[in-house]
Length: 393
Image (cartoon, rainbow, N blue to C red; front, top):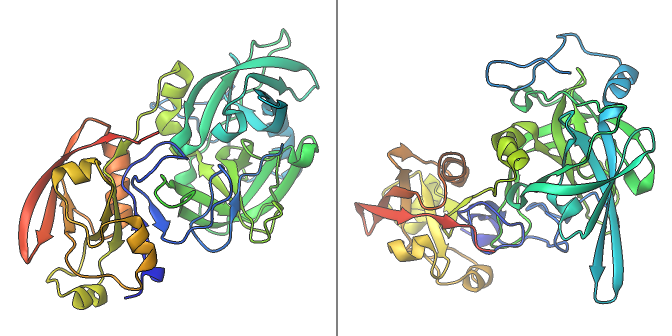
């Protein structure tokens, strides 16, 4: 089997610029500076330039089961959408960037992308009425490209957006984006859900962004951090990336948003200013199929074939055996050699592909937790215990 068709799992979850972790990534990804990029063909560019009802879990719910007209969605969401301008003081002077954000709490908490505000010395928020207020970053989750900033609410008050349920999205559903592309304030675009559950990596050895929403709603530089809404006017995603095969950073009909349910898992910590911890195992792997199993001469037909193991990673310390000794070897070799471990289960839960393994670790475990891996090695099943670490910075 040729490695070019290999999807790598780099087990972990955290900094966008970090090394080996847990992710499904292409072995030949196209990097695009420090912004998250797709692991598919082409380059992914981050689209940045230079009173709600609640259920018993505190998540916000729909006001109506009837879709709203597009102009009503805009009128409902517009007061909650802000422009975010960040300024960084560097060796050669100041640099400035801008993106979007969405107010999620009347106390002044605003959700955006991490890459919109990372490295900023000063952050300024422009409200829908044109007023400009200083902001501070409260909490960040670089591994999911999320951040929360806060402003002091003006006397006129703030309007918080309602958060929906991204798990209910179906391919073909209408979605709407509001943001500030190229500095064009409060631009409103419409599209459909092109796909759900996408996994993308910023590059070799980096943590992927999981459960992304793909849409053809036009987003461009400046839309980053702004809301993607469903037809009820609820926020179901945070616009983050766009496919950029031309290298020009403009919309080509393929954009990606962090799902709001991904946001909800860390939102309380973000608002509280807590650091978001993501676990790291430190392998790159390939889904084991019957055809690959036959090629490799292994008896299992499902699982994760360990292709590489990061040096001094939890997987390395646990003694997991890779098929190849380095990522460079994986990139240079045209086929997968035998000899690597096959991970069959984690904590007793069978894994049939890399996404299942990555999803379990990312959703159920934290750095410092120990996991038990059922491994097929040299034709024999054995148990391997690994203590997860934090994603390396």
